[in-house]
Amino acid sequence: MSESALDAVITALRRLPGVGVKSAQRMAFHLLQHDRDGAEQLSVALQRALSAIRNCARCQTFTEDEVCRTCLDPARDASLLCVVESPADQAALERSGGYRGLYFVLMGRLSPLDGMGARDIGLQQLLARAAEPAVSEVILATSFTAEGDITAHVIADTLRSRGIRSTRLARGVPVGSELEHVDAGTIAHALHDRR
Ligand code: ZN
Image (cartoon, rainbow, N blue to C red; front, side, top):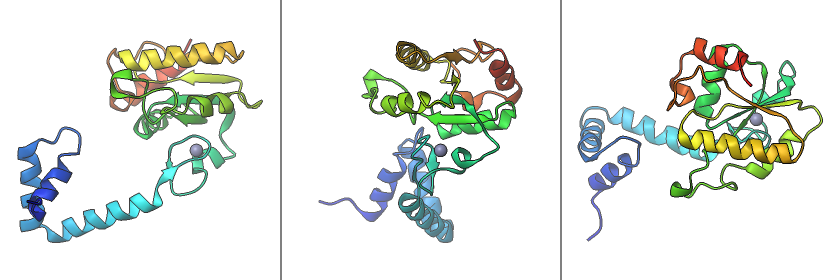
């Protein structure tokens, strides 16, 4: 027997992080009973995003163009390349106002248990990008979690073997933190005190 249309919505909503059966049911009932326009809006927005959004050819972040606006911005300091895990972390660094360089977005972090390896985070692309003559410093701003630390170590070692200098955000950021949840002032300090 195939899944009913309602069950298909609930199954789809459960793919979102932190959403269990009960909340998925509540969301599905809400959309179908009280907010059909909202359901339509959600459906159209997702369809549009799926066909329009891809990864920047330079930094891997989300963009609707071949190369994102940040990478193309001539006002950016091209000597600095900051490595972050996600577009959300990139946004957190931007909010801190303390950084005017460019980015490389890993779109994940090394995590053997989740099957995330060097290829999945674009390590080769990062090496090529960091080796460009304009880059004088690579700043590792992966999260201060066990996996974020390991990712930073692996990248630092690989860069060092190619003679490329890297620094790590200072430990002002609480251990176990995703950057996106850290306040702007703390990030600005961690950037300033990087080693
Ligand atoms: Zn870019």
